[in-house]
Picture 1: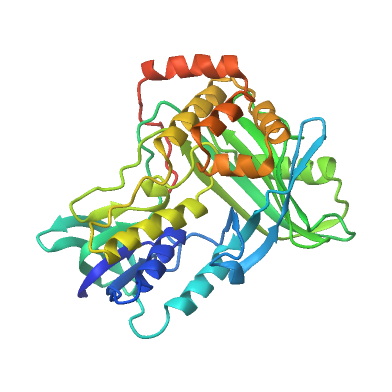
Picture 2: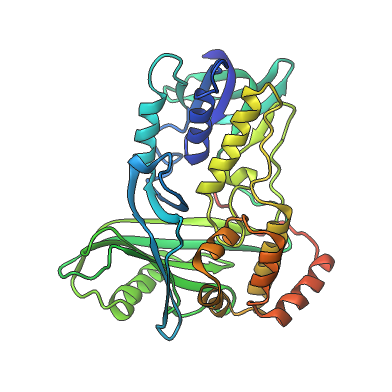
Length: 401
């Protein structure tokens, strides 16, 4: 099969669907482009359902698909002491990928809807008229698509050279308890009552959807992932020994690996070929949050396209934010910075609303400086002095696709 189109979006996850949706809704007087959206065929190439979390003011564009949201957030220290904040005007929101896909499928339906193609993509290259995408369709036939612009949203299989590369890796259980065990008004962002690794940090993460149900995750920032037995042991310890939930049922599970790196993700990889989402640098290196940055990035791409400009994705995070992230990652990886104490201290000393703006790269330099004074200044300054002398190296064995 061969097809010509205006825009080809490869990958139908958060970034690909968001871009197709935003291209489909141009400003008044502007035509919507002809879009072809390529998704992996059913099978091992298609990712399982997953959970995205983010904060924003309400109402939000995707509120109709949310599983839950909270206006109260909590962080627990290693001694169990809790820091609780209400980050108004923000709410912390939980969105499942299946509900997001259903919502956008409804919005994209109708005349001019993107053409949906299921295929394994083997190659993307520039051609005289734009770019060409080749692969194998779900029925086994050869596939060739040509478009003026191509946006590749598939996660990178190999991470770029970096001075520091950590992985945020986790496993979560959706649990249902016999007795009321959760406060559905409050989400636990970080609970440091977990054994800490020698480099990086670990924490529990609890998103309650009712008094009896929650997503409970064990998360590490470290160099290597655990095996299945390691995740299950960590979760059992957290659920039974730390939370003391009593009898419970696991109704579903999820796990993932998010790169945390100061490597530079190229956003333009050809005259007409761009990368978006995690592959385009949308993941915040210091936290792993991605969804909100994807919305900013795809919104900017669509606005440029509708204005007749080259739709090159902008950096998802400012140079200042990326520089601060590089310092934190190096401090964690070297063991110079105690990760649990670092985040615990920030949430205890900085107002929740300001801290969320800081984590989203939306604070001003004077606010960044004030927040910096509430971190371990000596170790951070030694790390700042060290970074310029470090060589960027390709991570070994870091296949995250």
